[in-house]
Image 1 (spheres, rainbow, N blue to C red):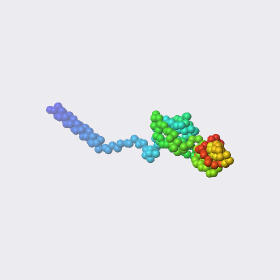
Image 2: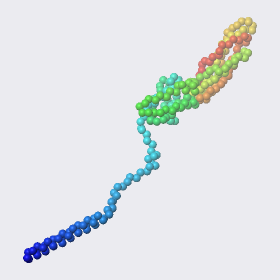
Image 3: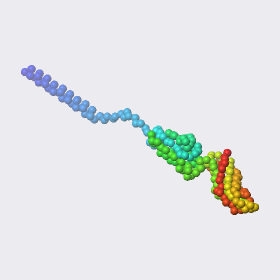
Image 4: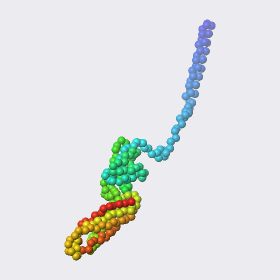
Length: 238
């Protein structure tokens, strides 16, 4: 009888202890679930300034070849790229350059006359700018020269107008000899004879400019003059 009572008592104590443990586990679980976890932000964002990025000019750094030519134009002309002097081009030696990719303005100057051409440079692609046609049309003369622009007879005189042309970069003192061949009938013998007249004409001509000079050639006394076309020889400039 005593053993039965002892066993029952042990069972009751065990049940009480088990119930307490379960309640404690549930209580701790509820406390864990009810806690609010606040995460800590350890990432520091990189600040950026969009306005600085938009002002950056990006260039490829690549260059392309350019050849500047004046064809048969007989002169030494200065060459400029985007208003910067880069050398001289001649009829026998084109000017070869390497320029950064992009658009550029090529300029050559003959005296006071300058000609511009736009060119787009690309890497490893040859570009050629030839100014010959424009020089022939717009500048016309490559060297200082003179030419007869008009002439007419007046009795025993023959008037010739000479134009001096200076395409160089400096002012020049220019001169030329005007010649005329003619025949006439002598008053005394009434025979037709041949003769000639010549005279030197001079002018100071500014760079890239032209100047007109008129000269009168004196003819031998007679009548019935027959004239050839007057010519110029011995053109000089200094």
